[in-house]
Length: 291
Image 1 (cartoon, rainbow, N blue to C red):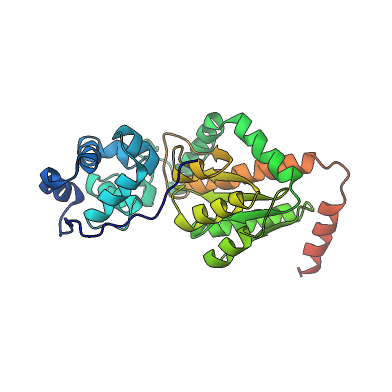
Image 2 (image 1 turned 90 degrees about the vertical axis):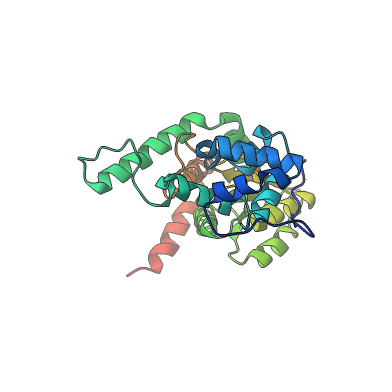
């Protein structure tokens, strides 16, 4: 298993300065170490592709490590590769992922139809691209687990909470903890027979990766649901499950795909328990809290 340690840049020249990221990269190109220079050259030559890649995918294209990509990102003044990608996307005008309709949307249609049609297209693309074997392994891990921890931070914390709620309604002993530190501590209490399912759109959320790594070291079966193949999360888990349309990276479309695959996993668990009374009991309990 590859390790993705925290990266710092001690005693190294920083190129942090005002200006577009491409100009900053170009101005400091000759002063970069060889591996970082390869990353910078890839970014400068094909920034349009890089903004849709994970840190692992860019590292592979530049023939280096993800840590080197992060190191370069911090050298030029960004917290990490995700922040550098956002800056590059704004510079290139490729801001679909930040709220605008897709370029191929029908401009004559109402806005809600443009966006919802794009989401449907992304779901179809994600379904076509997903690995059926990985889905089956993830389903088996959840179905056979004594306890399941759904891990996620930021926007993915809400998806983890939703998953815990839905799977609990099926009688699965499922939980999700919004606080990153408590989540990490809880992951350490898992063991053989348990499962930890990590959810991260980018696959680069450090807190999520640390939690699922701890769960794996404790003996639990681990799965990672993400939009990016080759991301650190896919390297940190037993079962990487990538569920995203390779041609789309919209801000809301990808969470829709993540929710949809969680729904498919829930359906699989339900089918594995015919005649189980848990869903009916859960429905009555939920109804008792409604007017």
